[in-house]
Image (cartoon, rainbow, N blue to C red; front, top):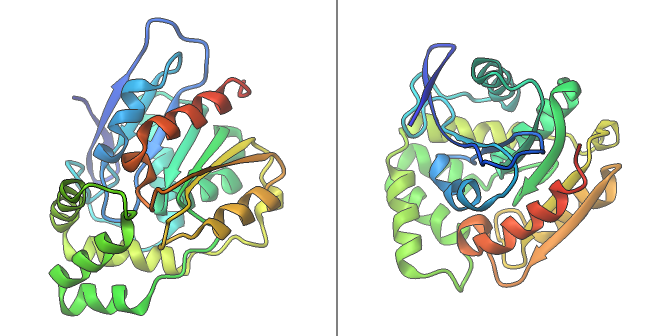
Length: 255
């Protein structure tokens, strides 16, 4: 799988280019403590559009320090798009990745053909138990995050894999991610975004409850909402087919 030179070091990503193409590239951005692996089903199954799923700096196989501000991750994402030769894309972000997507849409609107906002919100306050726990009891904090992140129907093995993956993220990177989320707030700026959007959320999401998704739908100028019954925060893993279907339906409208 390829690397791109972005800023301080190599950025890892996976890429699929289908034979039949006719849509803007779709770039998937993971959430706090995540990696490109959260999007492998969507990269594989999304038809008719080139797809990219990346590791943010300090995550997965990408080098360089993590960030503690959403805008800093947004700047890095623009550099990544430049490095892989993508001028304009549909940006699909989960949780913190959704915040990055909104930030880029506000500051670099000409780079954004559409937005996929998955398990995210216009403001992402973080429970003090998470922020304090990462500093004081890293393993306990990861366990808490993963218990809150998956819906009640998620298989136990999926939760174990999620915990194992997040525990591989350096503590300082994970803390920076959640600080970035906690500081993020664009609730009063959504009306400035003109790109079309699809909002996807699980009905059992504890970390970003469905009311966050409804707020996005109601305050973005061009947005549709897909609520996925029974899924939690990790909806793209818990019900990947439903997320793919929501994106396929949306992409037919994006030019």
